[in-house]
Image (cartoon, rainbow, N blue to C red; front, side, top):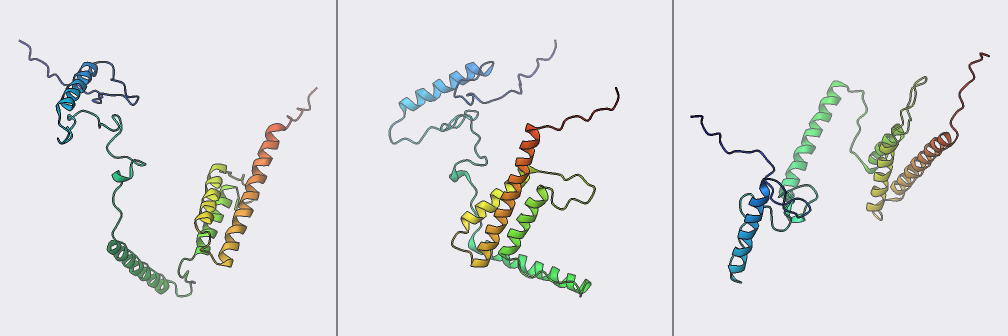
Length: 212
């Protein structure tokens, strides 16, 4: 007599779809029965009773199809940040390591210039150069420039966020540097996009072959 196959299926175990409907197919009757059991238990519970825990395979009550944790979820699902002591300890360890690295580099190359501490100007200049490279700056002679408009736009917008979030906290030189960087990048972005629009409206005409 052949051995009975185990009744195991690998299917989606969620009882309710993302639209709040009972999923069709094999799980439909099981989901309906589970919901009926929970409804009957809820009716018989007293006002002071503990909330009824959902069945093992039942979806969460607040959001049936939502996973327990995911990026962008409720704040109470986010992990706790580091404590003040953890932050201070990690910063101290980082500073000690970078100092050791600087000393090693100076020992290997005594004539090299030392960068020194990173300041706000370095951040703006780095983002400025990233956006410029995305718009074709630094292309070698004879090479076709590689334009990444979406990358350039993202960096320019990040500088705009930086300007908004640091408003009132910058000195005059820092403010002028940030404003100048944003102005130049935005103007260059407009120049490139306008050139693309003009070329799209007036595509180059094919050259005659010269044959009659």
